[in-house]
Length: 547
Ligand code: GLN
Image (cartoon, rainbow, N blue to C red; front, top):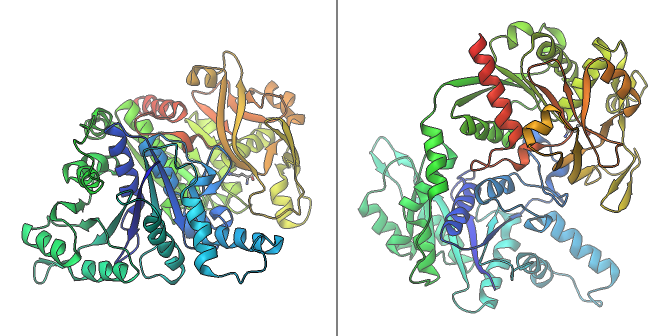
């Protein structure tokens, strides 16, 4: 049975709980343990699938097709453990499951209450697959004291109470603000936050304190005394140049040792940190840099393209170069010539997106990359826009477009070279959809296989002709125009195994122009950069040497 580590946060949000959890997961792995990480989010959406990327950042998709919180991306990038549907839950999901059971009559006429019905549902979720790993790390979203988080805090309190002694620990993240006027780190907010936790019956075993300044010994002692935590379990978390330094930094500060001590695991297995040392080396010892433009719509919030940004960083690590990413608003090119905005970039990436706004700009960015022979990576919508560009400007289908935009506008304006996919095969079953279906969870989601064309650039990059990648889309490139487009030089170099759905297109006579219907960024890791991103950055580097 797994040992459980519950991770909570206090004082302020955005302290980096997800990162701390992920880094701790990787450190436990480095000591030879198996781990799984889980996120429990107090908001009422059933999942983040329908939340705007402006509000919530990227939606991270798992192999089994769940649309989850972006923290699951951190978990995967640090531990390499593929996240599952059962690793992410929200109040919305919990309540909707409880209410469904109530409607079915499963509760046999009982009055349904937060305690025990909602808390039991949460506890059930926490323990899914508990036999599979040594450590289960469960992060609670939000901060202690939030109204909507209360059932989760109550559930983890009960859960640890239900378990044998020593099976669960609590780790709490706080902030030590620095007052420059008095030159002091203040511990009071941390004390208050721990009091708040204690008032709901949770006594933290470990405190991770975010701080801009080194924590003096005296302050550490004070925190330990007032918060009832061992001094060695007050762990400092300083700002880092790169998030990938976190495992080494937390190890240096004694986090993994404190966790093992809290579980009384002795002697502690020695950690093997080789992969993180290599990662560190690749970040700090670079030779050269490349400038890459991401032409997107949700550029006000960088988290909207979190995994893409990280995958580009990994691509840089693979080539030992620094990747400078610049966000370019696609809508500018709806009105203006992209050339002055995009000249000077060594490569262009057009990411995924929904809705028509900004798409004409993305089409022009694809045209610019194609005609100027600049490396281009189109992801999902970015691939669809590249195909529309090819159809309009090379194959002569002047009014080529996507059905997505016609649906949005409520009128037919385009020849749909990208159409609404209503039926496809998943494993051995057929999936069917209607235009009027609910928005939540109804896309082609999760891992699907693709077959790559022998001798294509992508087959070369992947080093194989059989791949599987994660999807999240409703619309699909229409094979009706395949022959016409291939005659013009746009190769359909990856297809679904049944040959019906285009997965990858590439321009044959271009140094590097690839569009993919899936999201390769979701599977890239610092210690295993995704081949497409590694090669894209290499192509950008080659291009930088030309100019
Ligand atoms: N909006 C497009 C679709 O649904 C692309 C989705 C995406 O980029 N993730 O097919």
